[in-house]
Image 1: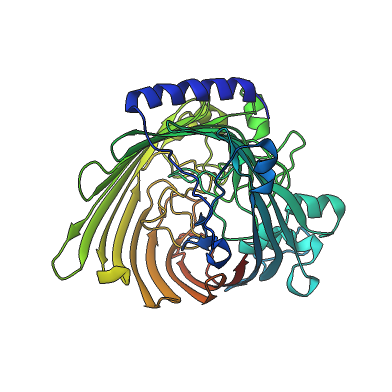
Image 2: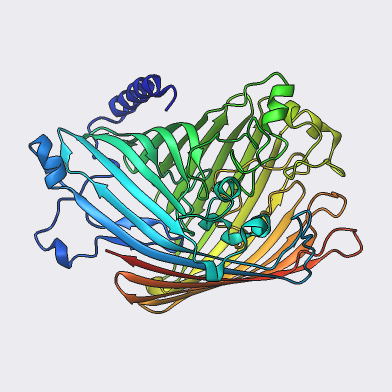
Length: 510
């Protein structure tokens, strides 16, 4: 892990500064003592976005050997199945390009060990694996046609070995942690949830980052974090890679940052042609506060030095009513500032193709912004909510966001959709309802209005997206997802990308 020593020193210094500013404070993520009846406690649970939430964590120990003896193992068995049905297949079997009806499945899971804390020090290590049964997958020479299911295997590994082999097996998490009453430091491979970055653990292996993070409570109901990452490991990779560069030195599309939302104009060859370094770091920081009653506010910052800088301000305000309902409006403003990436990308958009129909300024600048707003009407007793959402991207550059945080997430983004191309407007209506303590349903409808004059941006579309989650036991989850996309090229010359997508997921935690 490059520059890690310097990173730890810098992170420690910053954490100390924040701690002094806030005085003696409780840990941001306090380690819970293990209950005497922990065998009866559900150690972990899954949130709606499939992020794991720990209910039981190891406590403290008074010896080095106790770190291992008093640690806890967390297991997960899971499977993910996908079927993608295009309205119009365009697959060329010779060129191995185009739209191909496809199916994929991942079967595997994870085993994570969290040690007990000795003098504030602990560690976490986690194995993740995914294998692909041959009765529900594409042929090895058709993997370029895989869509949502591509994250259950490594396309690069399949390409190089000429087949699926034994699947993916990776060290998904591996970090040291130091925690006291003032701050919490993690160094190594880890999950990091923010407005920019996310584990996005909806497939088999989460999206992770290599580096150092620091968290601290700096004032009453106010916390701050800072992260310095040297590499990212996407869900379908078995090794870490650059945080923003598309393709590697050999021109391999699947051996660097090949996230679906990556800016393909920011390629390895383009960085070299511009005389710039193709290796980058990712810096993320945020401050969250609830000091004002009923108001959640967050200010976030991101930098890929030499490429792009972002500032995001977000706020949600709750207005409770006597009948138990709550009105909760929210806004997000995302401001993207070029830091040299525009010169590297040239006159291209996210697809890496010509930015036809864009302002000429995108040839030397990634400057852009987006505004998103939503209104939630939340039901009594947390039974569900109704939501109306809206987002609009400024008619300048596309938003650069290949870290799975999704700029419009929580406001207007539907499953498998990327609605942050320049001059895109999206309207969404959503309803979520808990029919029983074990059965949840969410239905979204989105109208995506892309710019018809931008040749290399997809056609307008309407999206239906249904999620259902059923807990057979406190540890056994079944999740079904359906996405129906109806595209309307409307004489624009754009391709009809209408499709239906179906997903089925099983999770057993132990």
